[in-house]
Length: 434
Image 1 (cartoon, rainbow, N blue to C red):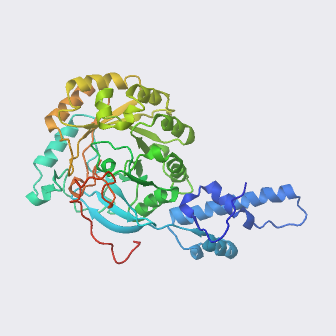
Image 2 (image 1 turned 90 degrees about the vertical axis):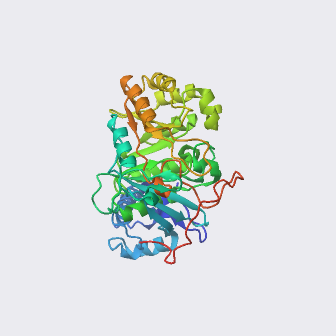
Image 3 (image 1 turned 90 degrees about the horizontal axis):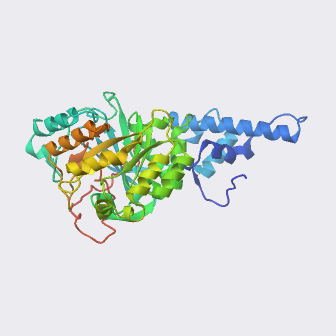
């Protein structure tokens, strides 16, 4: 069935898969030859439309061209039609900040003036699988020679090593884009600033893809994680379609191993994600009993740990693929050795790794970060139990760009003013950035 445009409504280019674009431009295919039959004519038209769609994907996603007139190997008539009917979305950069460790956070303004944040995370201090991760974390936080004002920002200690390198410097082995799927979040996890804010709306496919497109204009992004604002599987249609575009080798060209979708545990959507698109899966677990998890993650009241782990066992994994279990460590809540023992049992039999995340404190937080010795002891127990366990060295904490700290500028939908100290600079004069 062909897509029909009625009236002045514009279609956003980043909302289209390559197949949908080919279908859209099919009526503009020119097939020469009077003596060919209708069936052959239609076959050739489809082939030509597919080729044109491939060309256009190359122009936009690989050459970063956003002016239809510059696509010189596309016919003038088709370019004119595209100009009238299809818009290549550019997000407006409202604010950007670079942390002392090189992490770069962006605040984008959407078409309805709502805002979202996304982050580029350099790989200079990537997490390690052994206990040296904690040793490195302790060294970087306690021994780095920085002024007190630089070490303490937004109420948290600076994490990492100071660097003057920019994200486009070419000095990083890996650059991960942490992108948002919603304005706010409905999951209300008590340790997460985004969750406390509440949900404003879900992002559309083009708004998700455009984040990556904008970040790639600024740096050679190698990995994508859906770990920004929002619950990705609460917006499954847009997220799964965005993943198809990110994976398209004529478009963004990311490997399926380099795109990770994280979820708080929407069990039916986990199963559906596995059917729709081949990407990596991360589970925000954060507790080892239903009583604990329900206290900090309301989603557990609907889909408990047993249901969640069963969904993980059934999730389709290719050779050498693993599920990542994210475990935010909260002082005196889920960081005991009894918790570690239960965690070993929970993940047994699932190809997986556990990513330990010492809590990133923020204004109004009810929880505290465990000390490094406790994190190291917890990790050692998991390693001794045969579980691959990493410690995430939190990046960008001095600019509130770390895990659980992203938010919009629209206050808190849940009616609390605990975060009214959060400030943002006024919109930049220039509007959209190049």
